[in-house]
Length: 209
Length: 231
Image (cartoon, rainbow over all chains, first blue to last red; front, side):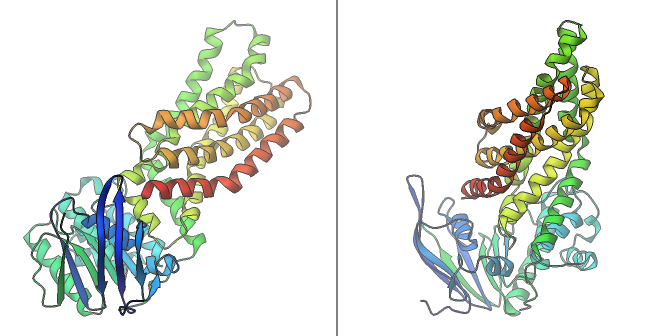
């Protein structure tokens, strides 16, 4: 087993999509207080790598381990320890931002509404809490998703292009939230083209075609 | 890092899912009403298009009722997992730390409440229009109840299999309708016997066994189908 027993360890993962060999033996290690930024041109498997790391996609070859154990054997614990924000915001247009959060976070842990309001406040969308998501802009939806990630109180963040649609202040906010999370002992695997300006331990993984 | 992120109970999660599904349904009442209106219209078209003799109508009524109920349930099945799959909610549900099977059970139950159970509730109106005597209502409601539960589960498997496809709803009908044939035979049979005043027990037992059969096995089949779609 690998040395990264206190974090996430992806080892020599191969994924085929039909005839296409998307991930060719990708390995990565992520320990607490670390942020790994995944970059690379479009279509090189960044999202696929994130889906493999989350356990949504089982790789044809290779393994993903959390705290030294394969994630398939600690599925429930692993899922409670991770917060995944995909490219789609996964918000229901007919529900309010608060209802959306209450449902999604509520599945992971018991959570009270004031706490969720506080998280929305932190991401700057407190005013949208009781509005149906259909009237929110794309950037506001991103911020609601960030509030969901925060409220999950997860150790590991898996974020897919979290800077999309965010304005300048939103990007700065996200950067500072990432720094806070990582400095507080968290782990983050972020797919982003955005230049991350972090004082924290930042590493890059470049996927090539 | 805080470690309070321990999984909430499965029962609580299921209640949460049911609550959310009902919330979503009632925010979009047109989706809720469409199958019901379809059911009412189709069943009122039959007496208009056929002979007006009540005895003849009464003979056909159980069949008409069941075929209409089947088609009306199919209308709403497509949306069971589709919107969740499209907006990424399904991925979040699969990563929620809860058993996906439990979530599928809760979703299908909520779906049955707003489609199947609602259909059962309006069926006496239709039955009266078709000339089914009030004495047969008990059997009819019971058989429709069992039938719609079974249908929801057959539909959940079909919806899970077709959720990733672009024009899945036609394929969904092609998958579900053949499987629903025994349901139609025994369901219409039970109602028919109740109308003619003979014992419907045999047909009801068959319906009940089909219902138990799908309730126990379909959740796992539907979950597996969804997992395949997610990959």
